Length: 389
Image (cartoon, rainbow, N blue to C red; front, side, top):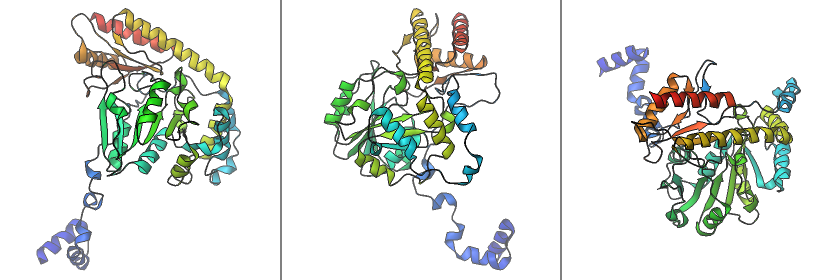
């Protein structure tokens, strides 16, 4: 034992008397891994798209807006009083909340701000999912959902889409222990939009909260937001990251019943949206004419790229988001091998897109964010070159 104490003293640079005390206290010798909640060491963190260094990449892998924010955003940030950075922001973002409420013709008690919509999704999982309260979501969809459920040590029922991307019938038959359902609409990564009729059917059959994640909602022709006043079990999440070009600011929001907003407000961080982000969000929301031009340009470019893919007889989903999900192929290669080959070829050309090889439905496809016309021209040229190799 004395030899062990001397060894411990040497290993941890401790005096011998401290090493003896250390060895006699079992809690001091336990690793941080053992001190953590039992399920934490086995978690797999969410993996975002690559963020390359250097400015010569064509970056079409994380569905960011290819255009800058409104000039009014820059003006508002430049005019922000520097001295106010020493003060905490408005904890509830009341001015921005009211602006969003007015925009959607809702009351302010139906709006809650978040540090990106991921923050909102995390709060919803924390409030409605744990060991005996389960989550439900179709697959493929946003891969953050299972990560958030796992952090809670919760349970989830995952239902697989078929190739036609119809909502699985089992989704409409919830179990009593299922308290929350997530539906990305338009879907990621396919871009397929689910109709209000389908969402109403979910609301009238699923026993728990139905969360419609409209991260790409501004690019779609239909939204679940008009259903909010009639269905208290509906929650809609949105973000300023995509169509408002504010991904770096981290601003999202939740629309729902006053009861839901009150529940989530109890567990959010007191200052979850900083002062500069609130200012940027207000300026962006106020400049709808600028953003409508951006959205129209992205939608036109998206539709043109879909036509280009279909001309080559590549299976391509009818996207209503700011990306296209297409299955590249060439004379001697198709399916998952073709997608992997095209992905690697594009990467060599310094063009980043997203590839999801783990699921049978997604493995033959690439998800390509809609960029500027010159960026999409570079993608078309590279894919045409790949098809000839």
